[in-house]
Image 1 (cartoon, rainbow, N blue to C red):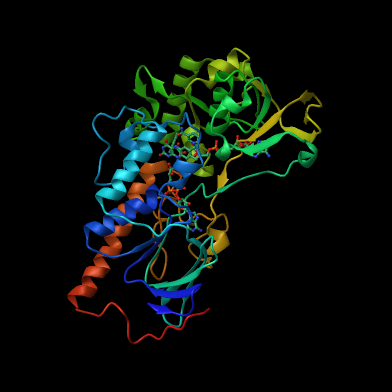
Image 2: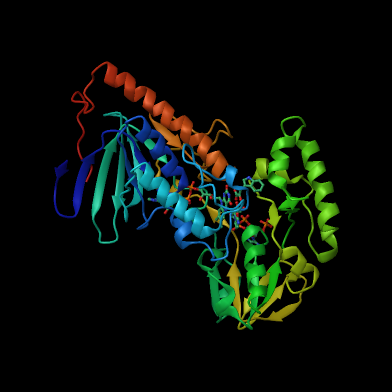
Length: 411
Ligand SMILES: Cc1cc2nc3c(=O)[nH]c(=O)nc-3n(C[C@H](O)[C@H](O)[C@H](O)COP(=O)(O)OP(=O)(O)OC[C@H]3O[C@@H](n4cnc5c(N)ncnc54)[C@H](O)[C@@H]3O)c2cc1C
Ligand SMILES: NC(=O)C1=CN([C@@H]2O[C@H](COP(=O)(O)OP(=O)(O)OC[C@H]3O[C@@H](n4cnc5c(N)ncnc54)[C@H](OP(=O)(O)O)[C@@H]3O)[C@@H](O)[C@H]2O)C=CC1
Ligand SMILES: O=C(O)C(=O)Cc1c[nH]c2ccccc12
């Protein structure tokens, strides 16, 4: 380690640098530990799995059965329910990190990373809340910052004049603070649906904005997970047929959702997830509240004004608060200076299962739009790939610090 001053340091990392200590980063780390490959994990928050610990609501449960959400080589405890809740999932991730002795560097935000062609190494720069800057130099870079790294906050006319509380769904914890209030929930994905349901359960009055269309699917069919059933059917049937069957099942169990103001997309639910990354809503009770009008469905928003919202159909509503359940985006384009492997939307250009490995020791984990199970698949491939090269190098008894390369700090 070369130290330049109290606030600027340069660190050589023997092994990969992993950016992000969410489930994806932890899964890669576990695979590397098993093979004895050293690494450093850089995490902007002060804890692992910050999305789950800091940016989700209290009543959150996993949507998919537990076997689709566990990370490699360390299953959920047997006593966990079919759909673990947020607390249980966080406890599982904490025990995962303990089990594999994974200790991320917390409070370090990666602000830039680029491949130095001259010395054929990655230069990764971080900054901490106290202003300390560190440059890490390494042979492998694993991007594990997630599909949900930043909140999407749309700019809607007049929002600055609204005057009431405006939050993003990632800062919503419970309807307790909204008791008796009229709340516009913008967006009808899984977040919008569940925030609206939670508001109902706390005697608030939600109006949910549905500006286009949405697939609502029952979480279970005859006591069996719909997702599991779909995965099972996909072994024998083409995707379009599975989509058709899902829609028939949804219609049989939920009825015609168009009657309550929800339009279905023309493309089937799995095809839409595959092509546009739009996750179908797995219903856990919001639809019932929509049918009973406890959740009011409203069209796209035209503008806000003081204590009011106006919709595209010209109707106006007096409201007390706004929850933007408008989704998330990747932050990779803000810090990774690379355009060959990653596209400008912050996702790898190659679709699943090929988006895990780039050029010159660059990897991506958790950008498959296939939730935690997609992340696990990526993680195992990455750990194996790096482990292989690592072992080859060891066998050739090469020194890990490449003395033939000169690397000068760019601070
Ligand atoms: C509300 C919600 C519920 C979900 N439920 C499910 C579910 O039931 N099943 C399922 O399969 N999937 C679910 N998902 C999908 C979700 O993407 C995964 O659960 C999982 O969290 C993805 O893990 P990840 O490690 O890829 O990303 P994240 O969990 O987002 O972790 C990324 C980490 O990287 C850190 N980071 C980001 N940028 C930087 C930077 N520049 N420098 C340093 N650190 C950085 C973040 O702080 C974070 O800790 C859900 C998503 C949301 C939003
Ligand atoms: N329990 C669980 O497992 C949960 C899982 N999740 C997951 O987290 C991820 C993110 O979900 P979510 O937060 O719901 O985000 P999504 O991206 O799935 O949904 C965003 C919603 O906001 C709408 N929207 C965006 N901008 C505007 C705007 N300007 N005006 C009106 N509507 C707008 C979109 O409409 P349009 O379609 O028209 O663009 C869409 O309905 C998903 O993968 C989801 O499955 C989330 C919650 C719970
Ligand atoms: O990625 C998500 O947000 C999930 O909730 C998990 C998920 C992955 N693939 C799906 C297909 C249908 C429904 C949920 C998921």
